[in-house]
Length: 65
Image (cartoon, rainbow, N blue to C red):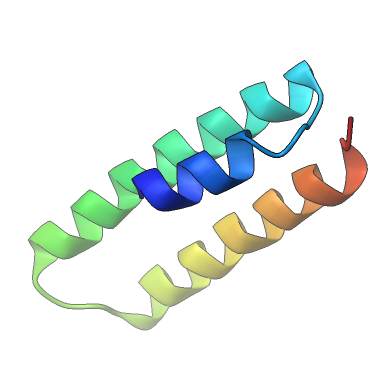
């Protein structure tokens, strides 16, 4: 996740967008660890990841610096 975090947070977004992205990435990382420890990926996990993706895209598209 460090690569994703570095790319998203280092691209000139507003402070509010960076804060929101930081929070989303923290939550995504925790969720990734949870899914990894469960030993299998289920449909509900994929839906949650898609939700993270949509949330990140919204922040990126609406909060440009």
